[in-house]
Image (tube, rainbow, N blue to C red; front, side, top):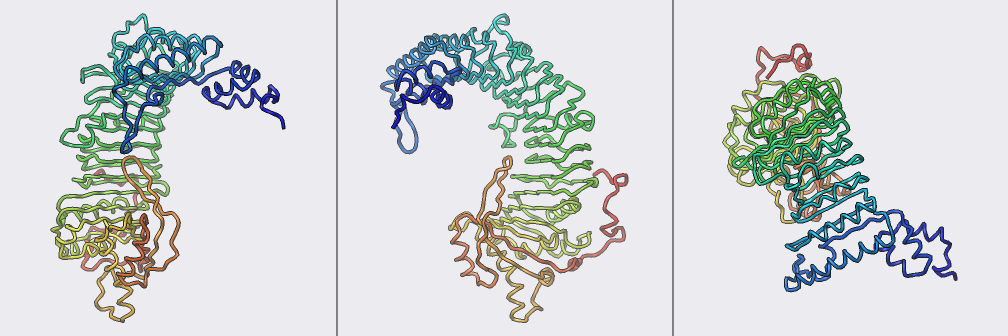
Length: 592
């Protein structure tokens, strides 16, 4: 049997090309042929990571700890390892394709960092990843003329003079994370890198909060992601090929309205003609950005506005927009959309305080709307009228609704029933409910009676996550209300049925394996494999036993309704028109 030493050189070189630097180094001791293959490697991916180097990390309770008594020894050991590795690279005259250096702790790393960069630059490095724990970046870094990808993390650039900062002629991607630098240094650095295509800026800047980043003209830039500290500003000039722009304030200051501090975005170009995706998180005065957006962003397809708490009203007009997502803008009360190409609309509010008034001019094709509302205040009569108005504004779309309700309920069912001003409940493709126990106890009228005056869902979904029964009250509500129709049919006692129960033609209950998917900050559960059990005929106790055998499931109540009839007590106003006549002509649509 042939040994590894007897392999042809071509095969050894081929195998070596698939190995990491560390693996290839180990094979170099097998034979002279393997050593020659290691020396002949055209590029090297060199990783010098302080955190993954030490064998003196100990685990306890799922966490890793340093042994502080051997800190100096560990630092010296890592330094020795780095210098030995660099010496081998220099001796063998190997090219370095990717270079990663990570240092940690308070230690005199400056000379080591400088030596690393000298070797990497001399070896024609193409990709840099430097995480330097707040150390200064040596001037030699800017001599890496062959570099195409740079990631700087926790690096100090504040004291760099302008003449030391030179451009990278071939740089395609630049990522700056918690880099300490001033405005002038930043602007000069970016202006020297005209070939940049992808730019990422995350929580950079000096000690002062009131700081701006001025991005000069970048003709090749097509993807820009910026996460600013509180009250920082971004100024963006010409970027004719920009396709994606993501701008966000610091995550610690965007989720709570009492401490909400926005960042600021100033777009200086009159037009970003190739922009397709725009995401604004906690951006102050974002409505100004959207003024004349049909001209400013003529090809925009995806728009997300989230945590913009000073946003009260918004008007969006665009022939190209396909997806709009509004989330957690707690001050928003009115919005108008003239978007004939829309495919999907999302409204989500995890701490909903206002149900906004929406107005849509007719879309030219089929589109869907996803509404997710979490309400923790009092649910009075006006709340249900606002919900009805919201659903009515989405009548042209395929509607999915998710409602989480907490707090007390003080609505007047008779007033809701007698004052609905539309013709029949709104058809809803999918309804997800989570009603807290205190809400159910505070209402003398079942919530389903009110909801089914407003809408007719084809499917009601209930997520069941564990056998502790977190959502058991809502599940019991659905079982009692929906199963009653079938039980009354069997006993031939249909006179006790409520209006909506008389209109419920069929019911099918199914259980699916649940699959969680995050969409932005919102959770969505998708149905996977279906259970074969038939649940419609079970009483509550046996129904619950079956459900408890599924630790992570989606329960689907499939509802089939009779032909649309006006709810009990609903009066048609003289000004009302048949629904088909309302289906909108763009020229006659009113601004909300």
